[in-house]
Length: 251
Image 1 (cartoon, one colour):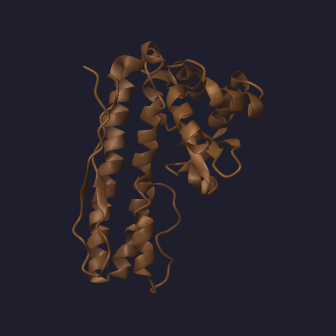
Image 2 (tube, helix red, strand yellow):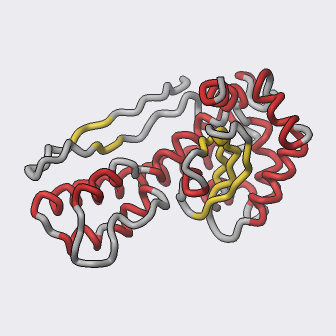
Image 3 (cartoon, helix red, strand yellow):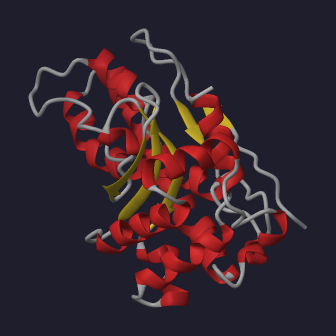
């Protein structure tokens, strides 16, 4: 039975130093069965990727967030600084929570932490970027996004070749993105390392399509041949989702 997307949040207690509550996350269900993307992506990979890797980001982020909440309440600057690495990895590649000094501005820390959870957010986007073939996966984009792709890259095939080349060339782990600059309305292709979000490449960039090129996304099926994974994932790309986001950002 197909699983429906559901993201639930619970709010940590409000800090006694005047901040609003922090939010933790739980693992969203997928809108399709684990085996629905085969043969492009195996059910075994999808289940492992979702249940283990995505869940690990959420678990570690929630744990670090609760510890941070307690440290802020106590005014414990040393612990806040120590928690930066856990929140950065599980939450994404945002800049450090605070300067490496003893003069920590807790209000700034709190505001930035609310933007974290990017390891979780990246994966939540990734699941929506995919769809079974019987539900439209792999169908070329239509409407305004299709026109914009032709205008900016020459053709859909040219865009795919560019994203495949940049994704294959990315050293280590990370993501390859198709995004739109909501100010200029231009489409861009970017890569980010680890769990860094697309916004680290520009504050006005909105992700339309993100492809996970960490080995855990493909190794069980494609071994170390990342280009084969990149070639086949387009068969299940959900261009309708990307088009909906584009139309919202570029009406």
